[in-house]
Length: 408
Image (cartoon, rainbow, N blue to C red):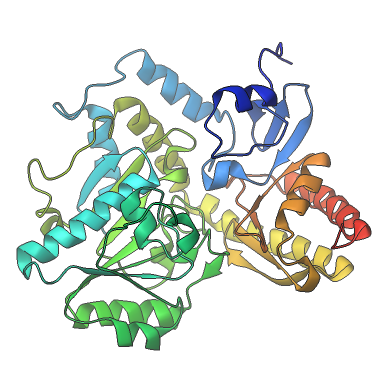
């Protein structure tokens, strides 16, 4: 237990109030367990919002980071570096991609992707082909461009005027896309599973239909795999289990296992449109980030590990359905791999934060996806024992909230 030098009250004194963290301040993690300043233990079903793909303090990641720290931290992209080249080479070996751009976050990866699809259309078809079609409830980042492509108005309010040339249609509604898409469309952007929008998987028919419509209209297909990538669904990238290949893919979150890194992947032909000087990043591709990410990708590319992610999905579904049956709180339990959501029903809609607070009191960290869905994105190597114990703690939390009543 560390000496307490700062507290939650310190946050109010020194931080911009765009976040509202709980009173606990975690100070140490190992595997899927976390301890706060007082030494209280928590099971981590949140995983840093799908970031800690290999849990906390994974020995291979710690060793890679320490080794690289002894050699080279930063150069900028005036020069290249060995870890960046090694990571890019590995990503192109494992995916459809032939070219990689590195940055620091999912928003930056998406920003690069959205700029690329417009530049590609400009170069190959002319300036009038500039429309980006995205989907309602989608989330693609917090920059002005990415929040505009995202399909949730609440994140854009107060920041207008937003970039134009963006259309939103209903997710999993192929007819709506057919009506919207045209030869003016330069790209369709989608998450294989909508994360922030409520853990909503795309149907196989929808994904294939989107690909076909893009091909018909010479539009690029962009998969935002910031949350679904890096093994989260039980595939290294979700598209690999969908029989559809995108033209551009974005990756972050689990890619660095907790170290900030993002990547945009595409083909050699499309990449030509981001020629010298068209885009950049001072920190993108720095040696520390790339060395850690390479260790993550090499670890996650193991078929047995990925198969186990799919198996563990069943453990989470069984646990949530059992809790739902006992307490009558879930309308649906869904997801893919270790991206799992339980949608609250009836009088419990909008009460997600209450369940999160109660779970913390029982020593469990989890998330919401909007106010109506309890979201779980734990380490991909979380043990069965930790899943079982986490579900016991969640059941106790749910029982307390239900006993208090929906209007408490």
